[in-house]
Amino acid sequence: MSIDDLPPLRQVIASHGLAARKSLGQNFLLDLNLTAKIARQAGDLSECDVLEIGPGPGGLTRGLLSEGARRILAVEKDARCLPALDEIARAAPGRLQVINADALELDPLAHLTPPIRVVANLPYNVGTELLIRWLTPPAWPPFWQSLTLMFQREVADRIVAQPGGKAYGRLAVLAQWRCDARIVMTLPPEAFTPPPKISSAVVHLKALPAPRFDADQKTLEMVVARAFNQRRKMLRAALKGLAPDIEDRLIAAGIKPTDRAETVGLEQFCALARQMKK
Ligand code: SAM
Image (cartoon, rainbow, N blue to C red; front, side, top):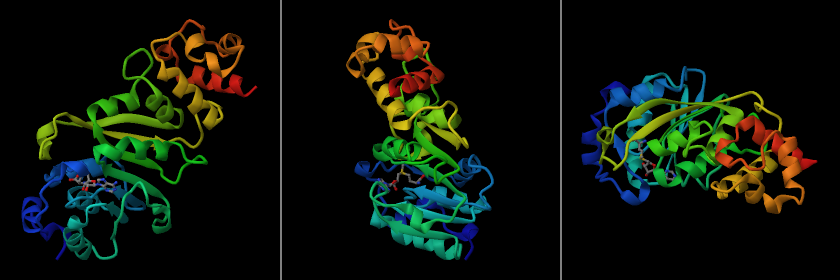
């Protein structure tokens, strides 16, 4: 049997008893045209290994295979999904490895050969945590070339946000410092079974070869976390505890001490991180 001959996903869900569980963030995509379209947002996968988190009954997995992914490592926490995923693996010999594990606990690198791209319809409860881990590895460039990820629309907006709005914060700075980040698709609740309460969006993040602006990662993370923790305060107050001469350092970084975090751009935050290291 080839992947095109596999039964429709509704039938797979019924025959394997895969009623969606809220606790695992299960909102499934059943339209294979849609999952193929999401897979295409990740670019040409024919020379790549793909890491997929949370394949569920395998809708996106099938989209990735039909779009030509060289090999997929799929990490799924829910053991109920394994028989359905095994059927897909048998229809695409040598191209799909499934690991039954919590993606937050597993180091997938031992099972992947570069170049690697990550594509996932992430469980909402672990999505942001995984993204932050992928954005803050010990060394850059990271193990992945790109991340193509489904998020709640509100989280997607925070990743691509520009200074000046409520969505702009730590996630935007971390993502845009070393990646090109854009929203490539938006999906209404009805695209999923069962439909969630909110809309979703696919974000594509492409790793840059080097950071846009020079800064020490830990210092930048710390400054940005502090600044946005008290985002309504002026920076001279929000960052007061960091250094006695914080006003001088802000000025040296080209930032007015009376500015608030949400008006400060990426380049200025990097300049401030460099000032804090002095
Ligand atoms: N990819 C499928 C699709 O698009 O229809 C399912 C997406 S559903 C939003 C999220 C999937 O992630 C579920 O299959 C769920 O069981 C799985 N999951 C939840 N938490 C997980 C974790 N910590 N590690 C791995 N998989 C997880």
